[in-house]
Length: 272
Image 1 (cartoon, rainbow, N blue to C red):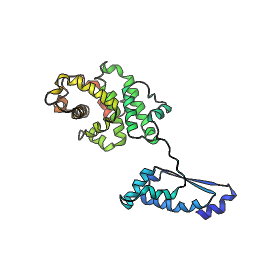
Image 2 (cartoon, one colour):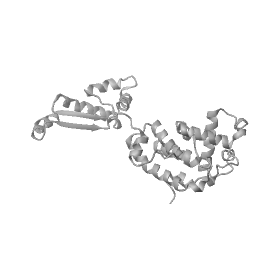
Image 3 (cartoon, rainbow, N blue to C red):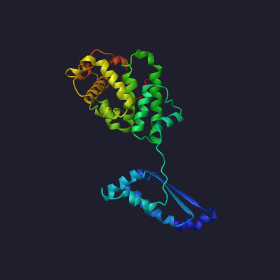
Image 4 (cartoon, one colour):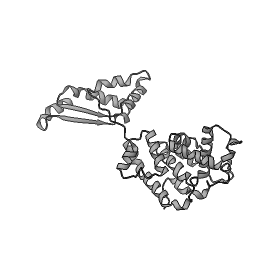
Protein backbone atom coordinates (compact mmCIF):
# COMPACT_ATOMS: atom_id res chain seq x y z
CA UNK A 1 0.00 0.00 0.00
CA UNK A 2 2.89 2.32 0.78
CA UNK A 3 4.37 2.02 -2.71
CA UNK A 4 0.93 2.53 -4.27
CA UNK A 5 0.38 5.77 -2.36
CA UNK A 6 3.93 6.95 -2.99
CA UNK A 7 3.59 6.54 -6.74
CA UNK A 8 0.13 8.05 -7.13
CA UNK A 9 -0.08 10.69 -4.39
CA UNK A 10 2.07 13.37 -6.11
CA UNK A 11 -0.43 13.44 -8.95
CA UNK A 12 -3.29 14.58 -6.73
CA UNK A 13 -1.89 16.13 -3.52
CA UNK A 14 1.23 16.92 -1.54
CA UNK A 15 0.16 14.92 1.49
CA UNK A 16 -2.26 12.14 2.43
CA UNK A 17 -3.87 11.85 5.85
CA UNK A 18 -5.16 8.40 6.74
CA UNK A 19 -7.66 8.15 9.61
CA UNK A 20 -8.04 4.83 11.43
CA UNK A 21 -10.89 4.93 13.92
CA UNK A 22 -12.01 2.75 16.84
CA UNK A 23 -9.24 0.17 16.85
CA UNK A 24 -10.16 -0.51 20.46
CA UNK A 25 -13.47 -1.95 19.24
CA UNK A 26 -11.81 -4.43 16.89
CA UNK A 27 -10.60 -7.91 17.71
CA UNK A 28 -7.13 -7.59 19.32
CA UNK A 29 -5.51 -9.75 16.62
CA UNK A 30 -6.96 -7.54 13.89
CA UNK A 31 -5.92 -4.34 15.69
CA UNK A 32 -2.33 -5.60 15.98
CA UNK A 33 -2.29 -6.51 12.29
CA UNK A 34 -3.50 -3.04 11.30
CA UNK A 35 -0.89 -1.36 13.48
CA UNK A 36 1.95 -3.46 12.12
CA UNK A 37 0.91 -2.96 8.50
CA UNK A 38 0.48 0.81 8.74
CA UNK A 39 3.75 1.33 10.60
CA UNK A 40 5.67 1.31 7.34
CA UNK A 41 3.69 4.35 6.19
CA UNK A 42 5.28 6.47 8.94
CA UNK A 43 8.56 6.49 7.05
CA UNK A 44 7.06 8.58 4.27
CA UNK A 45 6.90 12.31 4.97
CA UNK A 46 3.95 12.73 2.63
CA UNK A 47 1.76 10.41 4.68
CA UNK A 48 0.22 11.10 8.08
CA UNK A 49 -1.61 8.35 9.93
CA UNK A 50 -4.10 9.38 12.62
CA UNK A 51 -5.42 6.79 15.06
CA UNK A 52 -8.59 7.67 16.93
CA UNK A 53 -8.88 5.19 19.76
CA UNK A 54 -8.95 4.60 23.49
CA UNK A 55 -5.36 3.71 24.35
CA UNK A 56 -6.41 2.31 27.71
CA UNK A 57 -9.03 0.02 26.21
CA UNK A 58 -6.75 -1.08 23.38
CA UNK A 59 -3.95 -1.86 25.84
CA UNK A 60 -6.36 -4.01 27.86
CA UNK A 61 -7.35 -5.86 24.69
CA UNK A 62 -3.72 -6.60 23.90
CA UNK A 63 -3.24 -8.02 27.37
CA UNK A 64 -6.00 -10.47 26.53
CA UNK A 65 -3.78 -11.79 23.73
CA UNK A 66 -0.32 -11.59 25.28
CA UNK A 67 -1.19 -12.03 28.95
CA UNK A 68 -1.75 -9.71 31.97
CA UNK A 69 1.94 -8.85 32.29
CA UNK A 70 2.17 -7.55 28.75
CA UNK A 71 2.89 -3.80 28.79
CA UNK A 72 0.22 -2.78 26.31
CA UNK A 73 0.65 0.99 26.55
CA UNK A 74 4.42 0.73 26.09
CA UNK A 75 3.88 -1.46 23.04
CA UNK A 76 1.46 1.05 21.52
CA UNK A 77 4.00 3.89 21.85
CA UNK A 78 5.85 2.32 18.92
CA UNK A 79 3.05 3.37 16.60
CA UNK A 80 2.73 7.09 17.15
CA UNK A 81 4.99 10.14 17.36
CA UNK A 82 2.50 12.52 18.95
CA UNK A 83 -0.49 11.91 21.18
CA UNK A 84 -3.43 14.29 21.59
CA UNK A 85 -5.76 13.38 24.45
CA UNK A 86 -9.31 14.67 24.25
CA UNK A 87 -11.13 15.76 27.37
CA UNK A 88 -14.04 13.54 28.38
CA UNK A 89 -17.45 14.92 27.47
CA UNK A 90 -19.78 16.34 30.07
CA UNK A 91 -23.13 14.60 29.52
CA UNK A 92 -25.12 17.56 30.89
CA UNK A 93 -23.48 19.97 28.45
CA UNK A 94 -23.82 17.61 25.50
CA UNK A 95 -27.48 16.84 26.16
CA UNK A 96 -28.12 20.56 26.52
CA UNK A 97 -26.41 21.10 23.17
CA UNK A 98 -28.70 18.44 21.66
CA UNK A 99 -31.76 20.32 22.88
CA UNK A 100 -32.51 18.55 26.18
CA UNK A 101 -32.98 20.91 29.11
CA UNK A 102 -30.72 19.38 31.73
CA UNK A 103 -31.26 22.35 34.02
CA UNK A 104 -35.03 22.02 34.34
CA UNK A 105 -34.81 21.23 38.05
CA UNK A 106 -36.47 17.83 37.74
CA UNK A 107 -34.88 15.03 39.75
CA UNK A 108 -35.32 12.68 36.76
CA UNK A 109 -32.82 14.70 34.75
CA UNK A 110 -30.43 15.23 37.66
CA UNK A 111 -30.17 11.48 38.29
CA UNK A 112 -29.82 10.77 34.56
CA UNK A 113 -26.87 13.16 34.32
CA UNK A 114 -25.30 11.76 37.50
CA UNK A 115 -25.35 8.21 36.11
CA UNK A 116 -24.17 9.16 32.63
CA UNK A 117 -21.23 10.94 34.26
CA UNK A 118 -20.52 7.90 36.43
CA UNK A 119 -20.53 5.71 33.32
CA UNK A 120 -18.22 8.15 31.48
CA UNK A 121 -20.83 8.11 28.74
CA UNK A 122 -19.51 8.51 25.21
CA UNK A 123 -21.12 10.68 22.55
CA UNK A 124 -22.48 7.49 21.03
CA UNK A 125 -24.11 6.45 24.31
CA UNK A 126 -25.65 9.89 24.81
CA UNK A 127 -26.97 9.93 21.24
CA UNK A 128 -28.56 6.51 21.65
CA UNK A 129 -30.19 7.51 24.93
CA UNK A 130 -31.52 10.88 23.78
CA UNK A 131 -34.83 9.51 22.49
CA UNK A 132 -35.65 7.57 25.66
CA UNK A 133 -34.57 10.43 27.94
CA UNK A 134 -36.73 12.88 25.99
CA UNK A 135 -39.81 10.66 25.78
CA UNK A 136 -39.71 9.48 29.40
CA UNK A 137 -39.10 12.91 30.91
CA UNK A 138 -41.75 14.41 28.63
CA UNK A 139 -44.28 11.80 29.71
CA UNK A 140 -43.64 12.50 33.39
CA UNK A 141 -43.97 16.25 32.87
CA UNK A 142 -47.24 15.89 30.95
CA UNK A 143 -48.77 13.48 33.47
CA UNK A 144 -47.61 15.16 36.63
CA UNK A 145 -51.13 15.78 37.87
CA UNK A 146 -51.88 12.04 37.92
CA UNK A 147 -49.50 11.37 40.77
CA UNK A 148 -50.46 13.93 43.40
CA UNK A 149 -48.17 16.43 45.04
CA UNK A 150 -46.15 14.26 47.40
CA UNK A 151 -42.46 13.61 46.83
CA UNK A 152 -42.92 9.96 47.77
CA UNK A 153 -45.61 9.45 45.13
CA UNK A 154 -43.22 10.67 42.47
CA UNK A 155 -40.30 8.48 43.48
CA UNK A 156 -40.85 5.65 41.01
CA UNK A 157 -40.90 8.05 38.06
CA UNK A 158 -38.57 10.81 39.21
CA UNK A 159 -36.10 8.63 41.12
CA UNK A 160 -36.21 5.02 39.96
CA UNK A 161 -37.14 5.38 36.28
CA UNK A 162 -33.97 7.26 35.23
CA UNK A 163 -31.88 4.52 36.88
CA UNK A 164 -33.76 1.78 35.03
CA UNK A 165 -33.43 3.64 31.74
CA UNK A 166 -29.64 3.86 32.05
CA UNK A 167 -29.44 0.27 33.30
CA UNK A 168 -31.41 -1.01 30.27
CA UNK A 169 -28.85 0.58 27.94
CA UNK A 170 -25.66 -0.49 29.71
CA UNK A 171 -26.79 -3.88 31.02
CA UNK A 172 -29.71 -5.35 29.01
CA UNK A 173 -29.33 -8.72 30.78
CA UNK A 174 -29.84 -7.13 34.20
CA UNK A 175 -32.87 -5.25 32.86
CA UNK A 176 -34.34 -8.52 31.56
CA UNK A 177 -33.78 -10.18 34.95
CA UNK A 178 -35.51 -7.24 36.58
CA UNK A 179 -38.50 -7.35 34.19
CA UNK A 180 -38.97 -11.04 34.91
CA UNK A 181 -38.61 -10.48 38.68
CA UNK A 182 -35.56 -12.76 38.71
CA UNK A 183 -33.04 -10.38 40.27
CA UNK A 184 -33.26 -6.71 41.25
CA UNK A 185 -29.73 -6.32 42.65
CA UNK A 186 -28.29 -4.40 39.69
CA UNK A 187 -30.73 -1.52 40.18
CA UNK A 188 -29.34 -0.28 43.48
CA UNK A 189 -25.76 -1.10 42.46
CA UNK A 190 -26.12 1.45 39.67
CA UNK A 191 -28.39 3.91 41.49
CA UNK A 192 -26.05 4.37 44.46
CA UNK A 193 -23.64 6.27 42.23
CA UNK A 194 -26.08 9.19 42.03
CA UNK A 195 -26.02 11.48 45.05
CA UNK A 196 -29.40 12.91 44.06
CA UNK A 197 -30.89 9.42 44.01
CA UNK A 198 -29.54 8.59 47.47
CA UNK A 199 -30.89 11.84 48.92
CA UNK A 200 -34.30 11.17 47.42
CA UNK A 201 -34.27 7.52 48.54
CA UNK A 202 -33.50 8.50 52.13
CA UNK A 203 -36.52 10.83 52.07
CA UNK A 204 -38.68 7.92 50.93
CA UNK A 205 -37.31 5.57 53.61
CA UNK A 206 -38.09 8.13 56.28
CA UNK A 207 -41.61 8.59 54.94
CA UNK A 208 -42.39 4.89 54.43
CA UNK A 209 -40.76 3.33 57.46
CA UNK A 210 -40.32 6.38 59.67
CA UNK A 211 -40.30 5.48 63.33
CA UNK A 212 -40.35 1.78 62.44
CA UNK A 213 -37.01 1.81 60.66
CA UNK A 214 -35.17 0.93 63.87
CA UNK A 215 -37.40 -2.08 64.46
CA UNK A 216 -37.27 -5.54 62.91
CA UNK A 217 -37.33 -6.36 60.00
CA UNK A 218 -36.27 -2.82 59.05
CA UNK A 219 -33.44 -2.56 61.59
CA UNK A 220 -30.38 -2.70 59.36
CA UNK A 221 -27.40 -0.56 58.51
CA UNK A 222 -28.19 2.33 56.16
CA UNK A 223 -26.77 0.67 53.05
CA UNK A 224 -28.79 -2.54 53.43
CA UNK A 225 -31.90 -0.56 54.26
CA UNK A 226 -31.51 1.34 51.01
CA UNK A 227 -30.99 -1.88 49.03
CA UNK A 228 -34.03 -3.42 50.68
CA UNK A 229 -36.50 -0.69 49.84
CA UNK A 230 -35.28 -0.51 46.22
CA UNK A 231 -35.88 -4.26 45.92
CA UNK A 232 -39.31 -3.83 47.49
CA UNK A 233 -40.17 -1.15 44.95
CA UNK A 234 -38.95 -3.25 42.02
CA UNK A 235 -41.11 -6.12 43.27
CA UNK A 236 -44.06 -3.72 43.36
CA UNK A 237 -43.36 -2.46 39.84
CA UNK A 238 -42.43 -5.67 38.04
CA UNK A 239 -44.32 -8.23 40.08
CA UNK A 240 -48.05 -8.81 40.05
CA UNK A 241 -48.45 -10.33 43.46
CA UNK A 242 -49.65 -8.10 46.28
CA UNK A 243 -48.98 -11.00 48.65
CA UNK A 244 -45.24 -10.77 47.92
CA UNK A 245 -43.53 -10.05 51.28
CA UNK A 246 -41.45 -7.36 49.60
CA UNK A 247 -44.59 -5.54 48.51
CA UNK A 248 -46.22 -5.96 51.91
CA UNK A 249 -43.11 -4.51 53.51
CA UNK A 250 -43.87 -1.16 51.92
CA UNK A 251 -46.95 -1.04 54.12
CA UNK A 252 -49.82 1.35 53.69
CA UNK A 253 -47.98 4.25 52.10
CA UNK A 254 -48.10 6.45 49.04
CA UNK A 255 -46.00 3.98 47.03
CA UNK A 256 -48.80 2.04 45.36
CA UNK A 257 -49.58 0.61 41.94
CA UNK A 258 -51.66 3.70 41.30
CA UNK A 259 -48.65 6.01 41.44
CA UNK A 260 -46.91 4.77 38.27
CA UNK A 261 -47.73 3.25 34.88
CA UNK A 262 -46.53 -0.37 34.80
CA UNK A 263 -46.61 -0.50 31.00
CA UNK A 264 -44.05 2.28 30.83
CA UNK A 265 -41.62 0.32 32.99
CA UNK A 266 -42.06 -2.92 31.05
CA UNK A 267 -41.37 -1.26 27.71
CA UNK A 268 -39.40 1.83 28.77
CA UNK A 269 -41.55 3.80 26.35
CA UNK A 270 -44.55 5.93 27.27
CA UNK A 271 -47.85 4.17 26.59
CA UNK A 272 -49.72 5.46 23.58
